[in-house]
Image 1 (tube, rainbow, N blue to C red):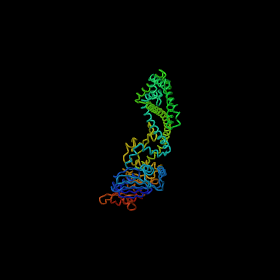
Image 2: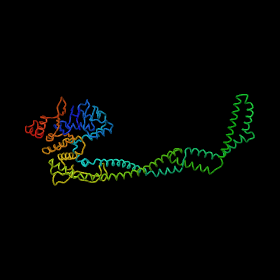
Image 3: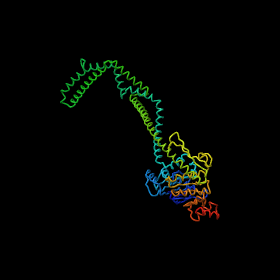
Length: 550
């Protein structure tokens, strides 16, 4: 529950410190005194954004702090999920500097607004004036019906399936879109890949083929050179090799007498070995130069294949062609993988859709089962609130597609007068009727809501007299299980307060400042009397106020 709210330097509030009761808290005051400003400050605690326009004094920071106790276990779950310590008291603080920078704290530890929103979802239910319109929205109406049906486990199970299905559907849609674009070019890519695959290219193949081709094209000239080399080295009348060996023999006779001569002998031996190697090379080259027109044709055909592929792909090497081949292979495999993934996701989606349909039908039956009770209970409350001829009726339709709440299209219809036509609330309900409907619906589901604090901002708008009196009774009953904070202009509602706060303005120097004061005894009696008759209150109003307070 909201134990205390401290506000400094916010709007026209210089400094207030409010201590709430755990049951029914009433806030009254003249229009424009700043009652709704309190809710604005509380909105900061609930994670709403703010800027420097909220600063009372632009030179100082704004400070809003709320402390909660006796809060539900869900709060501890949220705190642990965000790695925060769990304590007996929960303190949420917002600070807004003069530069506009906003900071949030939970139990003095810096926090993000996301955490504040998550916490306050389980702490405070705020029905501000502008949020009365939410009763006209089908989403809000369905949430009330679900709360009354008390099928949270069923709804959570459905929503978990729905989240998974939406995720799969999104991925599936993206893959199918990609596939439709890829299909247009995949035939061409496969043709290019098959052409390169058939070529069976190898690294450094081109250089080897071009070298062999060049050798074969010069075979006659090379064969002549080989013969000439062999002749000069070993077959002529004075072969070079034989002459060198004769010189070597003579040099070896002097090798033991001088180191330089010995070194020269080694050189002669090396030359002889090189000549031997050269002779082997001429034999090897000659063997390769045997006329083979078929081999030459093979080389020409192979190189033509390589050159043609290089021109097609605008590259100049086999290595680049192999790179293109690898890229095409990856793209085709990726496409094939996408098709496999599409098939897999389609099957998963179909299974989930079947499960969603089963859960959505269970939700529908659960909702339908409480329609009569809801209609009966709300109609009784409307009668109690001086709308004896008013009725609601719940209409159930079916949506074409799954939503986060199922396939049900639920709408609460309303008619204010006997014999009238049931129509959507947004088309027929006046401001006062809307307020009474909202209070009736909220009080109906309050027993299943674990929300510790419920805030009503002028829920009694457009009503007075006995209707307001009965509204006060409903709020009083609600406060037995929930902390109620209600801003009101109705003396009948104010008279039910366990704790009554009065908001008023005061001019200090050149500024107007809002104050909040807890009223008791004669002050409270006097305030309610003024709400009945004006300031100063009449004797009759004072007696009437005493009677209202009881």
